[in-house]
Length: 304
Image (cartoon, rainbow, N blue to C red; front, side, top):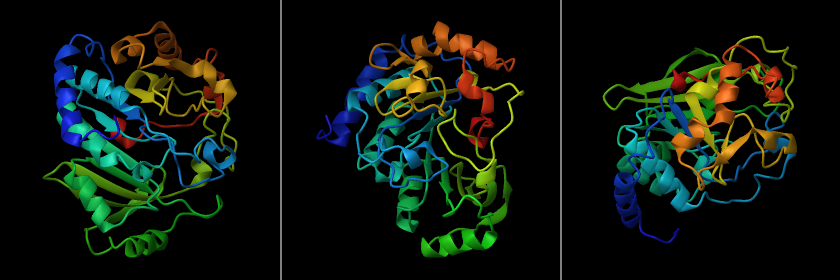
């Protein structure tokens, strides 16, 4: 499948969209879909599970037929939320990324593609190409070398200059939930680019798989992630949420909902196991998902 021309792939998806119209229904409440279409990440940050796991040092692409199936079902459902092509990977290291964006443009015409990247592989030409491909949200997180380094505006200016982006866009600087950011918005295209210098001390431990500077207290606030977002990993497995990583954390195997190869997105979204988590998380009950007890993840801005 990887050798098939992009146009041929898109044609197959268009046909599949008609065939799966019934399967695509039943996604009420879903606003954000994260599909990890590639495995590899070029970084090993200590505050990320990749920092002490070798699981993401090898590239592996989500089988094209599974991506096409997911896209067709979203399109048939008229999905109009964000479709993000990442999770624990670096999407710009994916050699197939722009073919995947072409697929989304045709198969999920009402969706908004999103890319979260560490920015190591990004420059002006690359950003302009993403925007031209229809990406509506680009988040560039410029991680520091150490967790105790506070975010500064100068660090943002320095990277923008290095990437050739300082003069290319009209950046607005200011605080965001994660730290400090340079933001540029294209009102006409409905696109937003954020370059964020994060405060690592605010990060959560991702269900006990990441080492963070401060251990979060027991969470007492409800979580809406299981009621608004769906996360698919590079194997095609749907997970409880984007914070779990079952391929490198054995305890997280219990948070796998099922495979997109064996069920429709609607069936997985409405499954009893995900429904059970959803009901408990709405009232801050973590008895069925102990990994959630120290998670302080807030809904990213794109999920509102």
